[in-house]
Image (cartoon, rainbow, N blue to C red; front, side, top):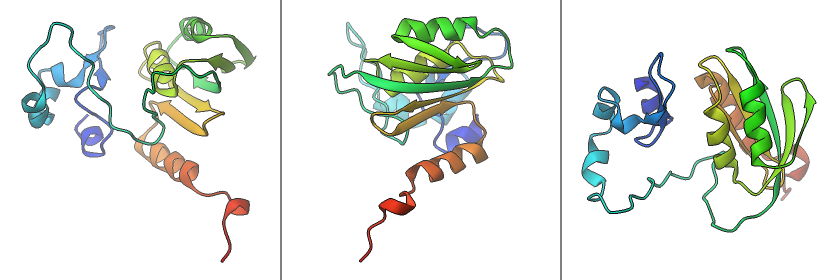
Length: 169
C-alpha cells in the first residue's frame, strides 16, 4: 500500500479493507495507513452536522461529478477469479439497463458517472478480480486492481492522440 501511495494511487479517501474484512473504509481511517497521510488529518475541517465526502482529485479515468444527470453508454469487462459473478452482474443491472454480451462483459446505459460505476462495482470484487469500464460517450476509462505496469501502459495508450487525428503543420 505504501508503493500505491508513492505512485499517487492511494489517497486518504481511498476505500480499503484488510484481509478477511468485508467492509471497506477510507485508508485514512486505517491505523497503519493513516501514517501515510499526516497532512490530511490537519487539513480536514472540524466535523459538521452532515459531513461532506472528501473531494477526489481529478485524474485520468475519473470525472468530476457535475450534478447534472446525463445518460451515457458504458462497456464493462471483468475478470472474476475470486468467486461468483452474480453479485457483480446484479450491481450492473441496478445501475441501469444492461446486456451481457460475453461471459464477463456488459453494455450498460446509465446516468451514473464513470467513477460512481467503478466505485459501485469494485465493492463486489475480490482481491484477485479486475474490472475495466469505458464511458463510450465521453471517451474515458476507469479500472480496478490492475498492477502498476498495466495501469501505466493503459494510461499511456488511452491518452495518446490517434494517428489519423494528429494535426500536420
